[in-house]
Structure formats: C-alpha cells, structure tokens
Length: 226
Image (cartoon, rainbow, N blue to C red; front, side, top):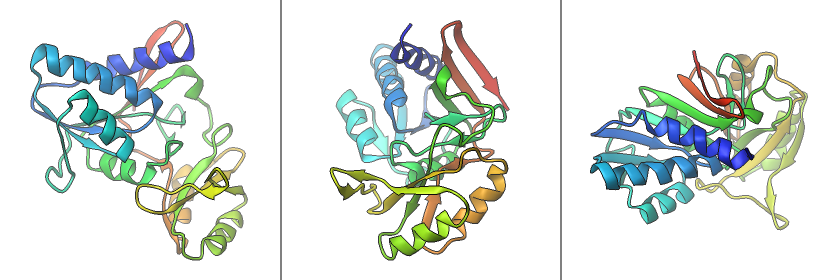
C-alpha cells in the first residue's frame, strides 16, 4: 500500500468516532482531507448532524465544497472531538505539528476539545520528536530577524518559511520559522521556553493534547492511546 492509502485508512477510521450532534474540530493537512471526504459522505448517507470548526482557510474552503456545516469557536467554545494530523508523533503522543502552517489555530482548537484524535501514516511515528521533522514556530513579522536570532540561540538551525522567495504568510498574517533541533529531549520545557520569547505567537509542540492517535500502517490500522 502507498502512503496515501495509509493516510486514507487512518482518516476513515477516525471518522467512525463522530456521532450525531457533535461539534467537531477540523484540522488541516493532507491526511485531514480524507477525513473531511469521509465525514461528508456520512453526513449525506446518514443525515448526520454536526457542526465543524475549521482550523484554517484551506480546511474551511474544502469543508464548504463538501457540504460540511461550519461555525466558529466563538459560537461553540466546547468542542466534542477534533480530528487532525501531525508531522511527528512519539510514544507518549507528544506531537510536532504545523507543516500546513495552521499550528496556532490548531492548538487553540485542540486545547478546547474534549477529545483529540490524531491521524497519520506509520512514517510519522518516532521515538523522539524533532529528529526528522522541523519544529514550526509562528512569529510576528515585526522584528522577525531579532526573534529568529533568539530562537536560534536555543540551539537550533532556523529557516524562514518561504513561497517563491517571499515569506509564507499564515492565516493570522504572521511568518513561520522552521527549526531543526536534531531531536527534542524535553518537549514540555521547550514549548514554554519558545513561547516566552517576545515576537513568538505559538510553536508546533503539542504536549498532552492528543488523546488518541490512529495510524495507518501496512499491517493495518493501529490505535495508540495515552
């Protein structure tokens, strides 16, 4: 099976946890796309009533195209279930997220969710996060070089995320710095340290937020719980 099939298998399994009248957090990324497609199918076939809270403009656009009803976190502060992807997942369900650029909104939605299911293919599982995946950090454009220097001083290699030689702009109007730490030993501490730097909006370390990970593997779909 190819990677896309593994992603789809994990995503479709996660959608089985969706129940009628739920408020759903809708994550961002290539794996979430398959979850949205399956969710739309269930809405149509089962007359399922749900309300989605999108974590990005791209997710909002796709959800609308698929006929998934949407609202906002301001209208529905308590989310029953969020389904989202991840760039890396360790055995304790610590995550690196933000490859799709929506890390701040994803973290806000996840932190207001009763349950968070992470969907991914088996290549995203790691013994230590930060070895293969860069850690995205959303920063303000104002004084961004100074902010990047302070992040670099923590012992990482930093790169400003760009698209066609221009800074990548998040839905919040900010920049993203991708940071290579070569492995993160104390993710809980690093999350706090990075967020204490003036100019940092949020970072892609998601600690103690995921309640379950559903992993698409060549041996079948596996479930990890904290």
